[in-house]
Length: 418
Image (cartoon, rainbow, N blue to C red):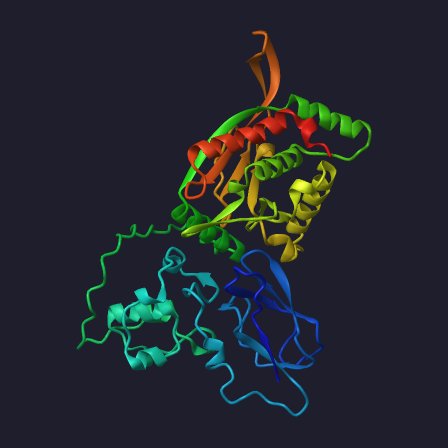
């Protein structure tokens, strides 16, 4: 028997969601054949059969989420059958950190918490043997509920948060007083005109990651105004000699990559009592999709020409919108850029894409009346760019210097041509 497990597609992946099975129970499959699709924290990917045989014992339905490494189906060869306990212990392996899913939905309380396992209430020996998520165990202990009396609705009969909240505590044994918690806002009553819209998986992930970044990372922001007249002239020159279309975003990618080379501290990751200064300069490009946000990565951006950066940017953006990005194209960013220039905005602050220490936000180009070097009034093309920095890694003066180095490259764009 060959187990089909939820694959680990990247170092940061802890769980995956089965979007749909493309094969059904009893179908004959071959090694490498696509049998389903899964949603990771970065992209939608194809699930390939790890062996040849008959697909049996499918433990997940579309929309359900499990930790990586958990069996979700089996492939049987001729004469083989499923073990008697199939779908029991193995399918109920606890998530590596905190249980975040119940029937495909993120538990808001868990997504906002990153408490270690030692912070959970003590459990009885009997309760610890019950198949239940860490969050379900915690709530059961607080409410005085015996987990062994609850039927789980999760994969393989696992008890999840919803099951515990719907159970009644034992009358004879009042629950211990829980630790004080912030008072939650009163639920908003829905009217007949209201519509409840379930969040797509990518939107759930985007919400979770941006919340974590703002809660865990002390952001500060520096904005500068950049004169882009020379960039405009160079873009027109490229188009006239048919060298290929180069966008302002491509100039910013190159400028940021060279600035990171000049100031490698910004190309670092905070790791508690030390910084990990990355050797490669890999720039993530935020791409807005209908269901959320994804950040494909241009690897080695400092060594690429403007034309190469332009070609890669367009290719990655198209793949993102077609849902065809590979895991390699989604991993390894050391810095990121978010561009709203096409959306008619004067300025905005981007949220840092962890574990990066900085991100640059690009606003729209405006025609402005400015005072020139000779005190003459001129009309120039200007745009605001704003750097968001992790204050644990970058001090205010360093962030200000960095964003001005980027500005200097953009205002002297011939230095970006290679």
